[in-house]
Image (cartoon, rainbow, N blue to C red):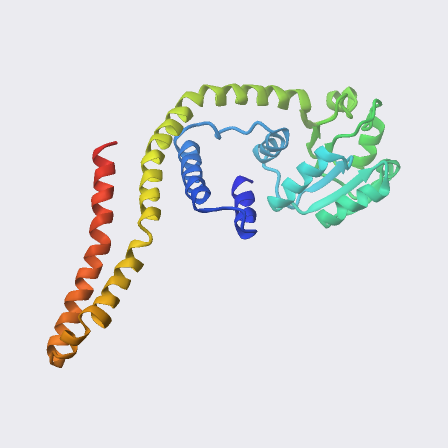
Length: 285
């Protein structure tokens, strides 16, 4: 997100050289933290945790997914699943237009919540998250959804209170993943991230220290950026004005040698001061 925001700002002309240098160091530091610590090892978002649970249960990308509720949480998890190549979605929502809106994004089918009890297409996974205070998936509705299917199913219930009746879990072969379990895992993972903060802060501190030198070097580069053009102007003035008569009196071979000497001197006059300045910076860190 930060990189995307920076690129948008850069393209709009709102950034300068200093911010470019800062951004390069920020990206480098973030990569080092990500690679050299465990801070990103375990997810903390409910959506990511729910997805991980589904993967642990070996759900395939073409499994039949019933999404009950088209609110923000289910939108996030459904789009996350689509991103990971899941493709068979049926969306149920109290408001059909909202179900249709989400179904369009997922290339799925939309239904009203009232149509749930009559759904006969079968399913492998139910993901439910509604704002209802009443049970949505009753044992009666669940049996109708099974339609005689005896395979073990997966229910991901992210609603508070839960949308699934306890009897559904007790009386059927179900992998049940509910919101409080995921929240507990998230809390544990957050604590693990906190434990990694010390290592992350060390990496950040080292990069800040290195960045101070990088920044000083860049300031010298900018301060001396006009040197090459100035040297070219001095050379041009010397050849075409101050020593023009003497040079014109030379034979062609001498002129060629002189030009090569001047070009060599020009390059050295540009590079040597920069090298000396950088050496001074390094030796006086």
